Amino acid sequence: MNAAKPLPIAPIIISILALLSLGSIFFFNGVGLEADSIHHHLIAKFSLNHPKLLLDHWGKPLYTILSMPFAQFGFKGTQIFNWFCQLFILFFLWKSAQKLNLKHAYLAPLFYFLFPITITTGYFGFTEPLCAVFLIVAFYCLLKKKFLIASLLISLTPFIRSEGLIFIGLFGLFFLYKRDYKSLLGLGFGHLVFIFVGYIFNGEDLLWVFNKIPYASLNSHYGSGKLFHFADKLIYLLGIPSLILFIIAIIGLPFNHDKSKREFLLFSFAIFFVFFLAHSLFWYLGIFNSMGLERVFGAISPFMAILVLAGLNSFITLLKNEFLKKSVLTIITIYTLIFPFTSNPAAVDWNKELNLSPPQLMANKTSEYINENNLKGRRFIYTDVYLSVPLAIDPFNKKERLILSEAALKNLKKGDIIIWDNWHSIVDYGVSFERLIKEERLQKLTSLEDHTHKSLVQYVVFEVSV
Image (tube, rainbow, N blue to C red; front, side, top):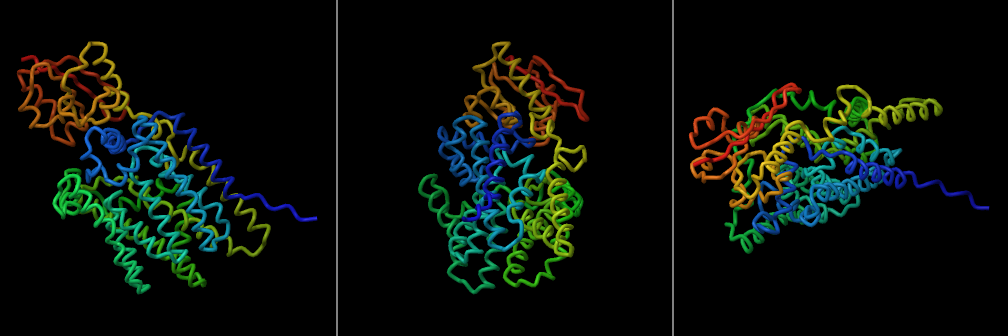
């Protein structure tokens, strides 16, 4: 009689994680704590009306093109797109861990899924998940020795996130090390494709992929911060149990005696470290419009999950007793499972981080005021891009909406509605409340304020009266 086959643990885990994450998309109403999430969605949604948006460098052309069909179904559609991205990440993370011969490979997707950074940014309108897909699939291709395919995939990452240029450099060094010059040349594929697509369809100059990079600036109006800003934030990206295992993995890398495994684990660490170092310097020096955002690490978090698993295995290897090994494995897994739901500051604030933020709720109230007072159909002037959602406005149609800036204030028409907020209007375009009060043509209709949080949330509606 044949012995029963063991249950396929990894596919079961991935299926459960897929269902849980799908449920969370419809249970929580958030759209992401930063405006970038909704902005990417709107670019994809309205690219059919404004085809030039398909190649908008800020929006990231490849992300826009791939997410555009989903965005037509609203923000939930965009979330479903990123949900599919997460499925690819979970699957190829497991397969990569298997290919690396890491014990308990089925835990790699679980660790990744439970990272606070995954929970809080992985299912909104951000570009990090798609970038992570291309990276982890390319990494799996390296493990399978399909270097050219990996090269072509990495060549496209700058059109998902600007850090793709960093990844091209890292993979370029890998191909040089392997003396694979054909794959090295393949890293130029993505730029060649988008150079000619932009030239043919938008009439762009041949260098548009370089000279229109939105972050190519040696100064930033967002300021700067501490050099060790992201080092301090690692605990909030990974959570306590995963961070401990991550550190163990880094310490144990030089002592891994399996040469092939060590080579690719070192490359995983290199992807993390170079990315970490680059963003630390960007924020410290105040360059490339860095805002010191933690969510950017979502692009490389699958490699952090690989290292967390490697750290777990290194720790368990130190134990001699088999019962003790199994007990420790069980305890660590259970603690990792429950950690995101604890009250620890490094865990997830589910209500705050997965639901609409106070400014977004205030934007909804502002929209209700607009509807109740029959102000729809006017031209709206505002900075907070999220307002486009409750107001049901095409933000790229200048007959419907202008950005609140000095240029817009010089071209006001009677009947225009201005919506000023005390964050985006000031930080993004430098338009203060005092500046608007000086405009004699403006009549203040209402001021909506929320004083219940650490900082005041304020939206003020003006009408151009003459």
